[in-house]
Amino acid sequence: MYKLKILTVDDDPDILDVIAATLEDEFLIIKAGTGKEALEKAKNELPDLFILDYNLPDMQGPDICKTLRRDALFLNTPVMMLTGKGEIEDKVSGLESGVDDYMVKPFAPQELVARVNMLIRRFTVNLDANPLTRLPGNVSITRTLEEKIKEKEKFAVLYADLNNFKALNDYYGFPKGDDLIKETARILIAAAREKGNPSDFIGHIGGDDFVIITSPAKAEEVAKKVIADFDKNAPSFFSEKDRIKGYIETKGRDGLVQKFGFPSIAIGILSSEQRDFSHVAEIGSVGAELKKVAKKFNGSKYVSDRRVG
Image 1: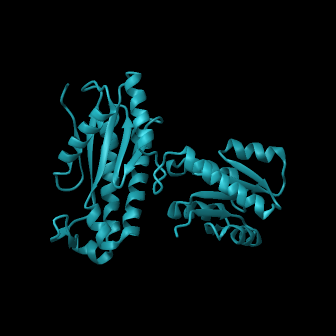
Image 2: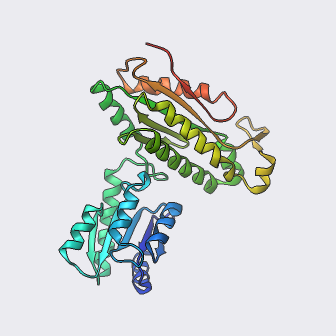
Image 3: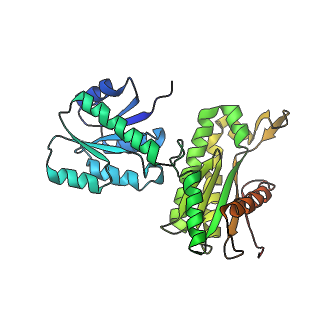
């Protein structure tokens, strides 16, 4: 049975063992003894919840939380803070950094279990997020677009889809495919931050389909950055032997064995400057059409809608 992951961070091995013994029947427990180790494991493991000690050898728990909250993949992941002091200043600092709940050591195991389950339930009920990338899902995507249409705000939408994803998934297995999806999410987030606006929205429709909602003036620069970073990283998802060949051989959608090159990304860009949209379904239809055109090219490509309607 699948278990949710909890990353526990404490420089006291005994505390880590107590937490693991308390929670391991229900959850998969990942341990870290420093802030640096915690951030590295967070990136690789994508935990469903964090339990952070307030004081660590290299950094404090609130600083770890602030770093996590700057990563869109962890923007809404529940964080619990543990402290041995119980001072109100520590609690305020933790809550201001984005901590969701607080417990003072020593703690009763039953209370830890209850609080962890409460945070998980709250996260599951309140957050419309893809379980793999933690990015907002279809409900949030639709709501964001509806608000922009209602406010008559000028916006651009990048619809992104991966090429050769199914072949890679079939050939190397689901874990490799999941890694590619997570890396794609990180690339989209980084590109939007660097080339877009602070308020840009990144969503995960599902599978290997994503969206970025930005301003019309920023859309193409964001797309160029996404493609550059994706193409730079794409070969790393092949084994060394296959990287040297430049392709893998596996069955295509027609059931015939074919050669597939490195994964690439297709992006369709539409803008409300080009046409007025009155419904989200119109946006989705145009975006799917543009993305389909982009997928006809070899390698990564973006296609912008130049039509006025």
